Length: 396
Ligand SMILES: Cc1cc2nc3c(=O)[nH]c(=O)nc-3n(C[C@H](O)[C@H](O)[C@H](O)COP(=O)(O)OP(=O)(O)OC[C@H]3O[C@@H](n4cnc5c(N)ncnc54)[C@H](O)[C@@H]3O)c2cc1C
Image (cartoon, rainbow, N blue to C red):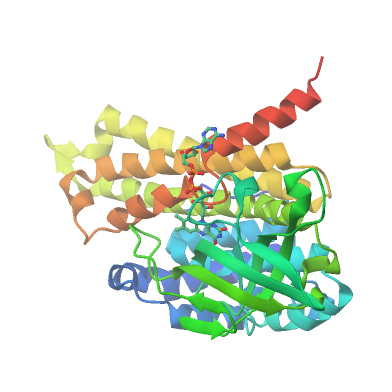
């Protein structure tokens, strides 16, 4: 019986979507996840299945061929998918962020051009802020777009593009000279079209190859070299330069709910594996679950999973209601990712020596959980966002 990670007040449609995704995860993801992950193999069949289910268009409005669902539905779907294999949720996350940015900030023409093909998964999105010299400090971006004739030329090096190889549309944050005193107002997001794959995938756009990672395998994470890539004003997100930083931060804010949801999915799976193992393994004449130290560990794990889930749900619901949620998204991301690592560590300990064997799923979760601490901003960065925002609200 499943007791944890339940959500009150869902519509029949939301329940139906989640039931279908849950079944897909049980049948198509969990049985193959560890093998594909160990081989670092792209989950092509799983991705095709997700396309058929309409997951790539989950939050894209119906008028553009999507399912028009809420951020809450999206977050709950991500929890289910990450419970099966976190990398699969990474395949859809950057796509979802780019679709969200186009939906919120794109021109009508950009919406018509991209959203219908993003709904089917024909166009696949990646987003790119980070560079070799920066991640947290977005103001330090060096990739530059300079005016050239009617359009722009982009030159620079980008780093850590999730889906960098498999995507065909990358939202790239660049420096532009808008003459503002604020560095944040001299940034512009360009929509860069390219072929999927590696090497020179568009004029002046090179994707060198996959970065070898500790976990989060299967999915491609890459660099991107832009060398006088020519583009037009039409490819500026929203058509107006100087808004890029704010558009990206909006994308990252919903991305934080997504990473929080992924962390809940991993933690929930780690809890399930731990509570199962604790009833099977015997020491000193009884199942280890009957030793109080293990029982308490189980209770703490479950409490952390539930707390993180509740915070992710609250942040998503605020966004869906059109309310501010910078603090709540930051808190949800921080708590969910930190708890995820603690729960996975606890489950690992319950597994004893077997947790260290690649035969056991917890070994994979252990490596995946670490990334939750990094993606969409570290806990230090969440604390900066939460703290600064609260100082404004509680100003004396
Ligand atoms: C697998 C993977 C996939 C990724 N995918 C993407 C992607 O798709 N698109 C993208 O743009 N980026 C992506 N990233 C980059 C990711 O967003 C950054 O790695 C992350 O934001 C941290 O930046 P950094 O690595 O430069 O660390 P740094 O910013 O150099 O931080 C180093 C340490 O210093 C701390 N720190 C930094 N500033 C402060 C401060 N002011 N106060 C206190 N502590 C501070 C940080 O918390 C951290 O502990 C990805 C990264 C990885 C590993």
